[in-house]
Every structure is written in C-alpha cells, then in structure tokens.
Image (tube, rainbow, N blue to C red; front, side):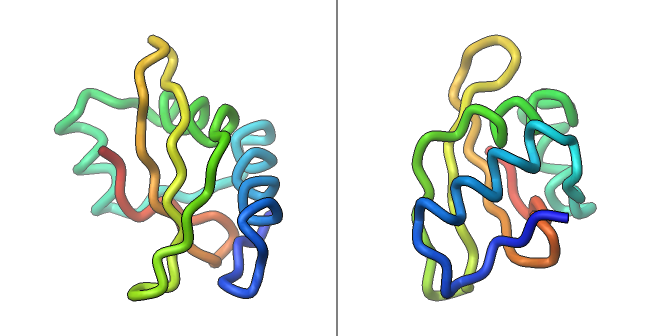
Length: 92
C-alpha cells in the first residue's frame, strides 16, 4: 500500500500517488465518487490522473495533497488525496 504523509516532500508524495495510479491501489471516498460523477470521471480516469500527475501541492489547512494529472481523454483532472493509503477525497 502507498502512503502519502504530510511529512513527505512533494516528490515523495507524488511518487506515492503515481504508484497508486500504476497499481490501482487507492480508495475513492463516497464524496469523491459523487464529485467524479458530476464531472463524468470514472475510476479509470482517476487512476490515470494519479498515474500521470506531475506536481503535488501540500494543503496544510487539511493535511492533504492536491495533484493534477491527465484523465483518459487527456484532460486535466485534479485529485485531492490524503494518507490512509492514497485515499481520493475530491475530484474536479
């Protein structure tokens, strides 16, 4: 299981997120599933965005990481994740 912790560097967080995308080992919360439906993003789009993410920004106010990758159509997809093994909490 991949872990994204707040004490990680952005590179380490990005590596964990990319690994989750490569392996498919991530959890999508009900909130993120609803957000994904609203923007017509499938689990595979989320997985591709995690796999292709090239920047990770720490959000200190909620101890989460925001990453932007490409969905299966090549469009930007923003994913917010935290440390329970790469748990996707928001998608837009």
